[in-house]
Image (cartoon, rainbow, N blue to C red; front, top):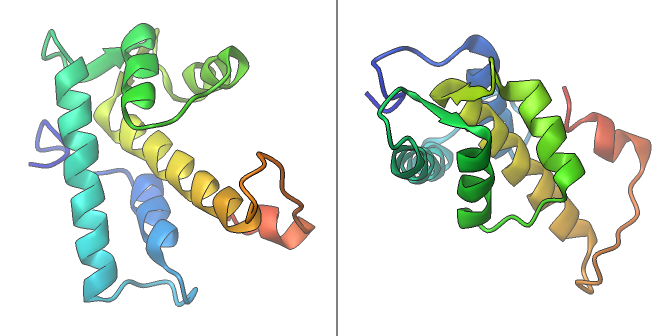
Length: 135
């Protein structure tokens, strides 16, 4: 299965995936949105598999950093530390949590890019803009 070990995604990860692509805030996805999600999942699965070199179903901290860089993100050491504290279990991140982290990174980056129209690395947000990302 796409989750690596035929384990279903957690309810939280499913909710995150839907909210990432729920552009009209209806709580559901249409076919085009599902297709986008499927493509993203396949990309994340391939990235995860390329860094899960021991085929344990998890990636270690340094592998996670490399995977995030491969996906095009340039995160500070503080951000990586935060990710490891949030998603790792004894220093290892399972696929479900890898997807959850990837969804959040993509959603937050997309939201930031929509606000950073001049690509300066700076943007202004209203409270609702930020709070809706977390619910």
